[in-house]
View 1 (cartoon, rainbow, N blue to C red):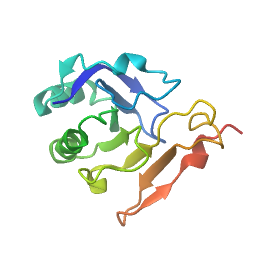
View 2: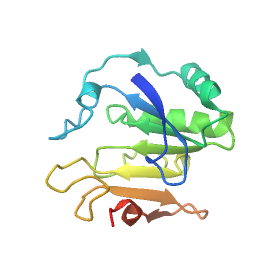
View 3: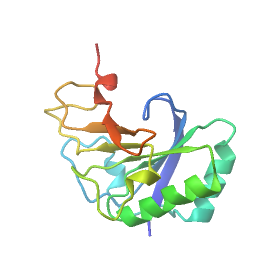
Length: 155
């Protein structure tokens, strides 16, 4: 079962969205240069459907998206929670930041409007760098994904 450390309302994680970002602990990726090392330990509050709905209700007047920041230790649980958001909180979009280079077969891309894939590699930079290995994908109305990474690059 997933645990989360904290949440925040953010404006830059997913384009054109006001996002309830949920920082999920227990990250197995351990990317060199990680800016969120506090998420490596498997600590925090269990993230159940009930807990997730309570977090959403507390922020629903403000947010347009729910973002799962991590969760690579249990991608099926992230998928299940994203599906819960879509069915129980219609109108909200969902996004996922995964440090993996490919999407797990335990995840349905149709449960996400945005997916960021790729570990942070310091020498390549974050999404803000044209050299990054990370990719931000946005689901099109037909269910396919387009790479919108270039929108993040500093100009």
